[in-house]
Image 1 (cartoon, rainbow over the protein chains, first blue to last red):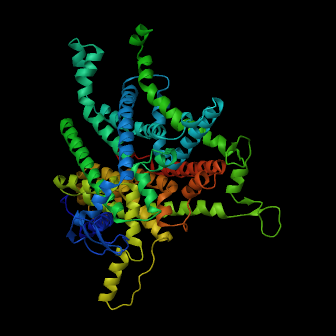
Image 2 (image 1 turned 180 degrees about the horizontal axis):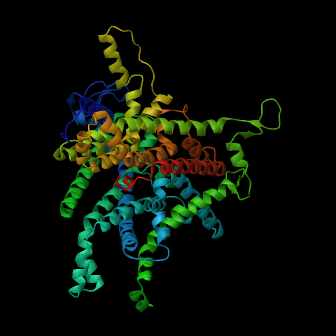
Image 3 (image 1 turned 90 degrees about the vertical axis):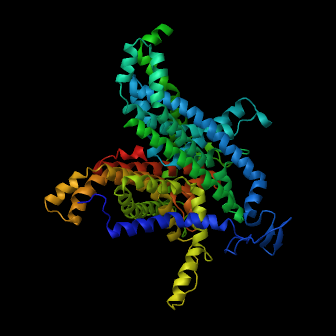
Length: 298
Length: 307
């Protein structure tokens, strides 16, 4: 029997599911070129380039950027720039910290025996089996009770008062990212031939040199894909950020959510399109990394 | 001290695992304990928590009410029980629909030529990593009265000479179901694919040699061996669907209220964190119970980490 044979039923179903997956995304991208500001129906592309924006009712007749009008508007939008800046700051900080401590934890769990090991291992599974909203409101309660108590006890006023912001969002992101980094690195360590390390030790390298020259280079692709996964999770997060952000720490998902409850112009679609392109690049990178890793492996 | 650290493997391990363990303890375990404590408290008039020990929030959640129509001191108010029931049945329906859509696609990818497999998988990852909020927004545009779905049905109806007036699909339970299925579909495709791909192809030859037809081979070989993937996928879909509030918020308007919406409103609009904490604890217990019985019956899928 040919193992690669496909029944027409499976093929049809697969094509239909792919259409289901992509139709909304294609619609989203198409409407980012909508001439209609109201963005309810597609009123065609913006036909002409001109020195300034010409509107006719809610229709854009011509613009300095032509069909890419909404992308130019997006570039001028300061709120988007600020939200993007916040999102990236949080993602970078949280990724660096969670990658370092997650890798350390993975090494400990895979290589050492210690008293709190079962507890450490178990806590890694919490974010998987508990709904995100439960984590979100738990962290919110912790911060609000703690900050309320500190502010009152030390009589903090004005800017000195502790409140939700970039720091609380970043700390909470690390909490849900670390388990993913640790589990990915742990998986990499499991499929690791220990004889390389033994050989290094036999040749007189001490533990630190063995780690730096042998272990680390071998698990590096695992650490990198763990880090990239964590980074994407942070960029993408809505629920945890929703409950832990404060004034001045709005991220892109929170910003878009806010827009959806007010007026939606094709600018939202332009923002989504840019975002999808960024994600596309990131996923491509991740795939290339993983492919290279599996090639090393075999 | 340093000397002892160099010699003791156990101390080294503890030190390496300490940052992660402390971080998760402070930001995951303490919040859970705090939620439990707060849920037994009472709301103060200004929306703060008074720490007492009362079951009021739980009895209210399960229908005990003192706000009765005909002057009775207490009565049964099904409001919150209905919300819990609605969330459970939506999570169940979503999971069943997602399995039935994900399975054929996962099968298609797993049986594709190895050279094309990566591309097909890549095509699943793009929607998966497209932001959750953006994906809800995409469906908002499609489901509107003026949206693409109504336009396409209109074309088909026109072609077949059937009268058709566009109707509002947004803000209905159906819209929420479609949105949930769309949001969580990739989380089912990946684990099912992983377990299908692992199946030793010689098993199919053996089945054929023993005279099994295609249907029998599927039921006796493919399906049982892919169950770990289905189980892992179900956990990855069922749990988040139970807790999500954006999909029902945006696609359901104020019509479809789920546990997630209930909790969110207690913390942001109604300012009753004690009741919100109780609801959130019940949500957690419900998902853990369902997950526990489900995994006890079918085993815990190791595919869960892969996705």
